[in-house]
Image 1 (cartoon, rainbow, N blue to C red):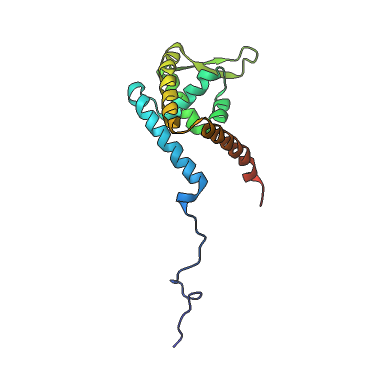
Image 2: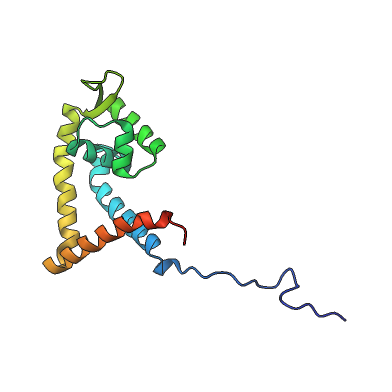
Length: 164
């Protein structure tokens, strides 16, 4: 009788790489970011009817008016399709307005409308207060280290494109 060995049996367990998600930095950062965003969006979402993507766009336009949709996508690091859909909702609600760039009539730029700034002026302090409370357990040194580490990680993203 021929006894199959693990390497020849189709049902035998195979050796696979082990990826422990709970220790994998990109996964941990994503989970943390999602939890923070969902918590904060719970505060402004019901009151203003804004999704996370919509608020991020408003936050960017509140700080940097007259950006194109592509520039908004770049600054938020969000998918262009997601930005386009969220912008359509914000434009429809009158929270964002579109205009042509003064020097280049072919270039479309976006900015918060007066109503959009009213919402922005209420949500921004709420978001800042959430950040303050989130960081309350960190002393000044911890915050400086966190900021430095996040900056280093952001710089390191370019290394992901290099072949090992």
